[in-house]
Structures are given as C-alpha cells and as structure tokens.
Image 1 (cartoon, rainbow over the protein chains, first blue to last red):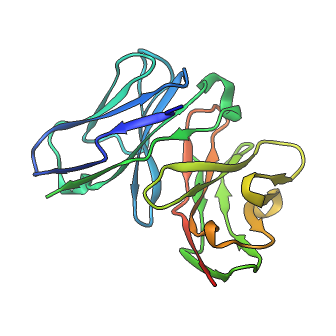
Image 2: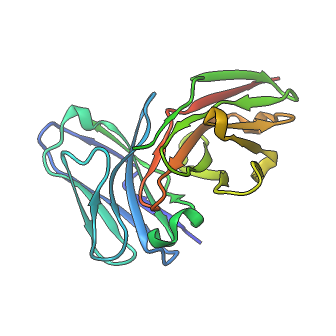
Length: 116
Length: 113
C-alpha cells in the first residue's frame, strides 16, 4: 500500500525557472492538500482540493498554482521560482472534507526544493 | 482563524524518563486537536486526536494527551520515553468545517541514553 507518493524527492531550481511537483494517492481519498514546511514555522497550507474538480487557497498561495488532475492526483506548480520558495513541500490526503476531521491527513514523504 | 503555539523548540529527556510537550491553541469555536510526529526525512504520522468527550485521549506508541479548555491547552505526554521517540512533534488545530488544519512550529525531541 503506497499511500501518498510525491515526486521528485529533491529538486534544485534557478530563480525564474518553473516546475511541477507531483502527488498521487491510492487510498481513494476525496481531499488533497499541499503544505510547505519551513524551520520554526511548522507546516503552512498552500492549496487544498476538497474533491475532484475543485481547488481552494490556503494560508500561503501566492506564487503557486495547483491542478486536481483526477481523484488520485494533485499537482503543485511554481511558474517562476523565487528563493523564498526554498522549502520542503508535503502533499497530504484525507477521506472527505465534508466529514470534518473524522478522517486524519495522510502525508507523503516530501519534496525538498532549493531555489538559488 | 485558528492558531497554535508550541513554546518549546527543543526538549531533551533521558531514556526512560517521562515526557510532556506543550501545546496552546486559539480558536473561537470547538477545536479539533491533533498531535503528529515526524521522523527525519519522513512525512507526518498521526499520534492522536481530540474532538469531544473524554478529555484524556490515548494514541499510538504509548502517547496520551489531555485537553484543558480553561487553559486552551492540549499537552502530549508519555510516561517512559524510548530512544526511538526522538523526532519532531507537531500540534495542530482544525476548524469546525473540516477545511483547514493549522500546525504549530513543532518541538524537536532528543533522547539521551
């Protein structure tokens, strides 16, 4: 059971370059999330998707775009990377947003991104 | 909007000693409270959660947490720490709609033998 799979694990970009972080889950979850983790700041929500076809902004959406390609996949795109986007990015999924928090988040192992 | 404060950035305890990690939250409605653990290079794993009912909740790996509404706290405890408990621990509060989960900054636990 793979759970939540993120690719790539590591990435180095130059300022202004673009890239897409991929996330896929095999648990048939409705909801998916993208967080970034920075030292001393915990995890901050970038975007989430309550169901296939819908996306909403979280706490720190600026500089990012997302696509919920289908129920399994939720990608995060950086159109023009900046050094401030150097971070560890985590994708997560849960059963259903309408069920409130009866369903915990399941996390991937993260993507470590460095922007120079 | 909800917020979480974990006052201790680092804590070091001896193996076999008891542990308490502090968490204070701010939220105007009934909070949904969680503790997650993160081992190096890994994602986050749910330890336990509190939604309602008994204010002392049991989790995995021998952890427990107590919800104290009057103190807006949800502290994590373990009676006897093992070396494998060394990790970073995050407290989180979810809104009443099931939309947004806000995390604290984390507490790094070191276990000395």
